[in-house]
Length: 80
Image 1: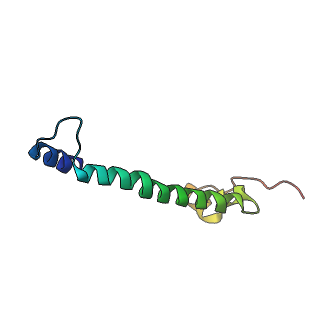
Image 2: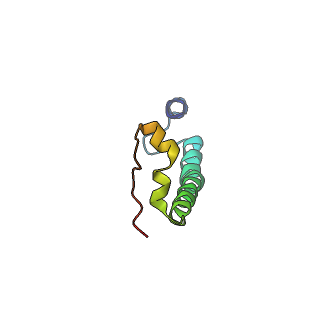
Image 3: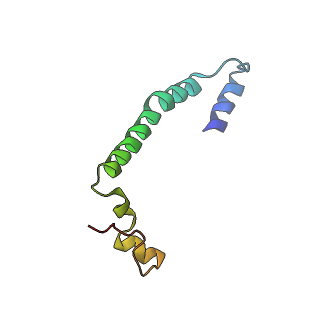
């Protein structure tokens, strides 16, 4: 995409201080929409993990233990 934009700018004979409208649009889209969407997804994941009753327990489920090939629990739950 960057190379395509550079080709447009070269064809339009824009100087180093001017940008084509496509570059300006993509820059604003990434800053104002895309990054906000990514931030919202990350915050949602963080919220889901931190609201779990025992966040560390999620890391040591049976599937994870099987993938890692461990026989014992990765995390010990304290005595109750």
